[in-house]
Every structure is written in C-alpha cells, then in structure tokens.
Image (cartoon, rainbow, N blue to C red; front, side, top):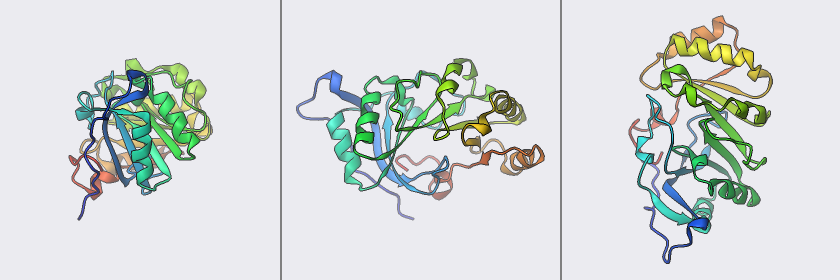
Length: 232
C-alpha cells in the first residue's frame, strides 16, 4: 500500500522575523484517523513542542527539532494540497503563540479548521470559527493534573472532547467527568483506547452496558499504515 508523502520542509530563505514564524515538525496530507471527521482527507500541520509528557504519547518526535516557517509559507503548503479540511496539531500546538494567528488566517481562507489540544493551555483566544478537539487527560496519561478545567467553559456544540483510555480506571474516571460536566449534552464526546494497550471489545461493552452516548473511536490511520509511520 502506498503511503502519502509530502516534500521535506525547508527553512525559509531569507528567514522572516520571529514574530511571523512557527516551528513546524511536519505538514502532510492524509486520512483523518480520529474525531467525528475520521475517514476524511485532511491536511495536518504538526507544530513542534509540548509542555506535557503523556505516558502513552505517540508523537514524542514532535517535542524538539522542527523547521522555522513563515505563516505565509505554511498557508502556501496547506493550500497546495487542495483539501478543505485542516487540522493544527502537535505536540501541543497552542504552546506556540503564533498558532493563534495561523488558525485565524486559515479560517479567513475558508478552510474547515480543527485544533487538537491537550486542554492544558487556555483555548479562549482561539478563533471561534475553528473547532476544538480537546484531549482531556485521564490518570493513565500521568498528566491529568495539568488539565485547565476552565477550558470547558469555552467548549460549544461545534467542538469535541476526547478521552484516551488505558484501562478500566481511566474509563470510570472519564465517565465521571462526562457526567459531572454534562459533556454529552454540550458536544460530541470521544472515547479512544490507547493503541496496543486497552483492548477494544471490553471497552465497547462497557460503553454499551453504561448506555453512554459517546463515540467509540480507534486511531484509524494506525490500521491503514504501520503505527510507527510518520506523516500519515
């Protein structure tokens, strides 16, 4: 099976001022593997850097390195794929201040913009035209203490919240959060098992037994391509 590829990122020449650049790990065109958009073609802009260190993180390569690109260069690369759906991800994309401007400029160009964020950084400044996919960290991530709970006040029906679940304890914790904050009444809620960790069938049965109105999702791209493949 062929794997989507994109040209390697090259530093801008001459480089722009720091105020108009982002540190980019990769930009690529692939099939959306998660969220209610799973299965759709999507352009991913993966920003470098993350203040969290989740135990199950599958993108640790985005913690460091990357290439400085101007916002104009990022927009040009995204536009070149001819795909209307764009996800800004990381790492933690909102850890770079210029990410907020990139999001607004993508919205200005009428892209449908998804933001995958950890919930550890204030989402209030995010352009209201973009859709937040907020990953609420369960205890198994070892980062649940970093959650900025006030972020839930900014979640609307166009947004989504996601729980990555590593075991029954995570599941029970997530169910409690969903009920306490009435999340299923506010936006789509996603329950995602840790790939290669939590088995699929037991978790699906828990959801059915508890009559939860959540979306059970797997990381589709990891079933299409090798789980360790980058740029998909």
